[in-house]
Length: 143
Image (tube, rainbow, N blue to C red; front, side, top):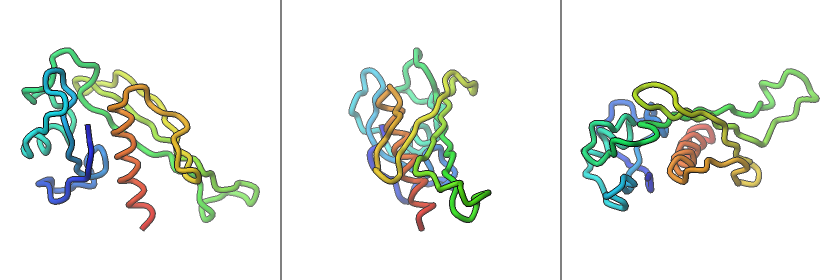
């Protein structure tokens, strides 16, 4: 469960991580709830997905990793015509993967003007990952 950004990790390209940067947090695996994984585990498994090599990862799990992408609203310079106003909604797509294959996918929705989620994921862990991904994405696009 990501809690805070992890600066200075050992990844060669942290911006390419599934959540847009490194994160630290606590485990949600059965029997290890709220335990803090070692830095090496966080960098090797938690931040990359495909945690099947992690000793804490349960054999029975819905997915190994979650990937996100953003369908951004149009901006003034990309508008095709004057009547097309910039949208205030961000659409996030997600794909949950198990053994490198998709097992679930869908869309989440965030209202940029109100700063609220309009469509959330039912799993609090995946929703938290979406929030972290969005935070990373917005920090890069608003600079």
